[in-house]
Image (tube, rainbow, N blue to C red; front, side):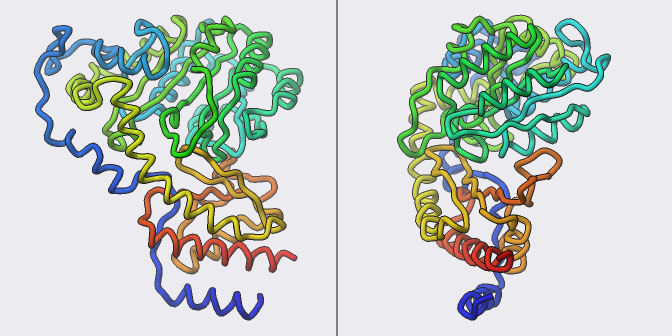
Length: 402
């Protein structure tokens, strides 16, 4: 280790830091944007005449379904409202296929497989692992999945049940899939099997903080491709209002929609209609949601710009990254197998980063190179220090591996 780096590392360690960069959480100032929800008076009846205090409306109140359908550009009758997060609804859909299936329950089949873009969302991997589903990884190109690899996987493997992906501001790379990429994926998957399931987790659908690529609504592309009966699109308010206290939405073709509704009917007595109405009263409509997200962007943008400035000074021979225009993460790729070592060094100084390998199934990054950074939760001063620690650790680990 060079003397200058050694001295800098020692000085940082002497500060006794305790900084957490592990999860993509909104900062307190972002949560404050929705504080009105905490004291809002909720009417006992919806405009459509439903008593929100009572049982019923398992698919959600009409007003909330209408709001969700407008965000996903899908028909209201094919949209339902759930709780907490898109992840929960996706889990319920996988469970429904496992127990019942559109034709044959997955539990009665062998060697189940799913295609997963990498670097990807660790919670998707954990979900599939729960069901013993083998994960076939596929790289991202900057504008979606690598279609050559996708087609090769379809040719090489039997019993691939589907793909789960984040088509806008992908976690963690920031990829926004092009219309051509999504359309090609839909066509290839349908040709492979009429039961191939397309799961689009639009967790960051609304989360632009810089000018972002245009993208035709995913549901529209699904309809154009004739893939409605094999597709489901999800989004939520987890990072629009409160984490765990928002709403989640799912739109799907009727076979998939009915399967998800059947599973939810076994698990949930009725939906939280009071919270649904509260959110409708607060956000009102699609325009209201967009205005809310503009406020989030004003808070989030400076944090990412600070991170970009810190990472841009690193020699590209050490590592590279793509600048996301939305979402909650930065995906950094080291040129040497040092991700685990970088994270270890950061921890020694008191800065926690998502564990190495988290962006790959079973925590196995074959190159030990990908590191996920989450700038949003920290204040600017703390984030600046955390980035200084990260860059210093990156340079030290790179030298060690020379």
